[in-house]
Image (cartoon, rainbow, N blue to C red; front, side, top):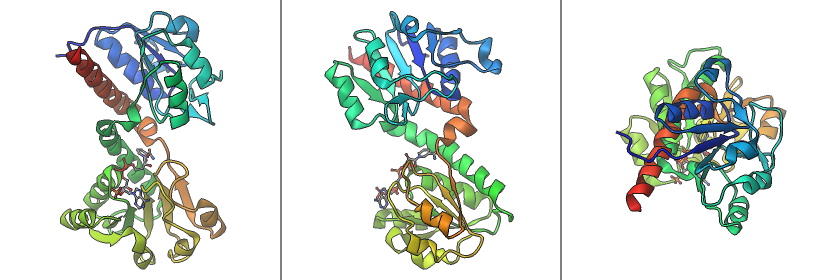
Length: 296
Ligand code: NAP
């Protein structure tokens, strides 16, 4: 049972998963207000109308910004509305002592908030959320591969670069569909895990040795791993799917020049499974609120 005090919550910006989060919180009895977040027709009946941000922030005890919170530097990511909001202007609106949740905030922006006495909890730094997000990310990556390939994943030779949360979740799903999976890691311990999980292990630094045999390559490493030189060894018709956050690990300019299809696939949880992603956000936020309450 959720025993957390029903504090007033304002959600500002973000995509469809924020709407599902708002709906879930409301169903749990939290007074919820929205700003820079337009409900879809499907959810309009379950949610309050969006308000002017200044109004919506008034008396808020908890403020939740979209995940990820910012785009194009310091603009609030708010794809459901046409107006633009700067991060600094959002900070101006925050009530004193409000608990603030956000995601993927660059260090200098966090510092900017800290200088104003605002502590922001960055949800994308929470390992439990990253673990949950890996589920939808892996499913979304499989869906992209199926859409882009002219062959089945069954019997296809796939490479997954990086064997963290997304990489391992993806490898398992590809194998379940009958693909032959080579997974890469930089640490020996992870290579052993790849082997133990039933896949072909490969050191990330030596992935070039296996590339010539791959039909689909998924990258989850957020550092350049697929250089032009390596891309040149891919067979004709190979597909690249970039899952790592910008700037990613694939030299996409080189891929374009070499005529290799490269699909950038950011923000998959919000795109392929906004309801689940919203439910996961809700679980993580309520756990954090509970922890805070227990510590008082
Ligand atoms: P993770 O669990 O930390 O896994 C990252 C993997 O990359 C680990 O195997 C890590 O190895 C390896 N790695 C990191 N830096 C490396 C380097 N410089 N050289 C070689 N290997 C390196 O992260 P994750 O949760 O799986 O997320 C992976 C990426 O996907 C992140 O950029 C994340 O932001 C992004 N992401 C994207 C989506 C989407 O929708 N596209 C969704 C969720 C996450 P070690 O374990 O040795 O460090």
